[in-house]
Length: 264
Image 1 (cartoon, rainbow, N blue to C red):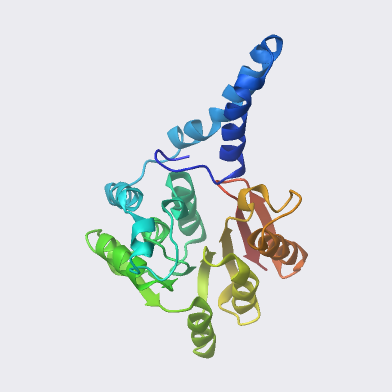
Image 2: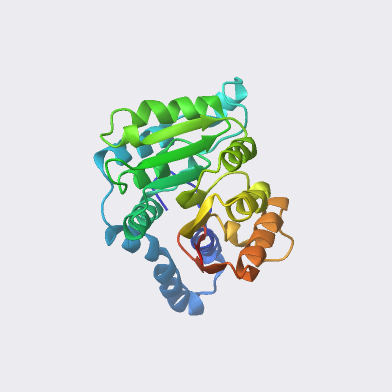
């Protein structure tokens, strides 16, 4: 968990709950309990320490996103929806996405859900000089925030932001017959199924391309009882991906869950 962010991934939530439980644990069990807590709490910092460092541009963008008063922006009507700094992809996931772009030798990337542009910039850094990344963002303020922080980067010119409802943008891309080597989903969780259908049935994802989806553990709700509507939607998405024989998929426990699905 990055500094200044509340936990949203299952591991971070586990550490938070264990920490809160610590005073209630009997003295005779404290030794073993503290060992378990250290084991859980030490994993995320160790992963960050052993992951390639962020570029200066990504560090600046992350700091700006964390410092922004998103709740205040929503309260004053500047944003059209409630945004949170915890929506930031973060160091390890950002570098994972960049590595996937490099490994797949992608030249055209589609992202659904820009927020501040952190994941877009991380992926753009892995694209060749003539690579292209189209990212969809429904909130005009978030899109402008992303543009301001992408422009100073030497990789910012690779990124184009489409402002408007993601499904409308995807439908336009399907009509135009556009295809992409890698698609990253990180927007409205209740629409993930529809994004996936456009990617596969609408052929936005090229054969041999990679579909990536964020938050596919959704704070553990996908396997815990009484999930929220978002948790139910992500669980349905996970089932659909796993059952689709056009895909070879795996769900990784990176951050809040990262699904990778190769189109056969």
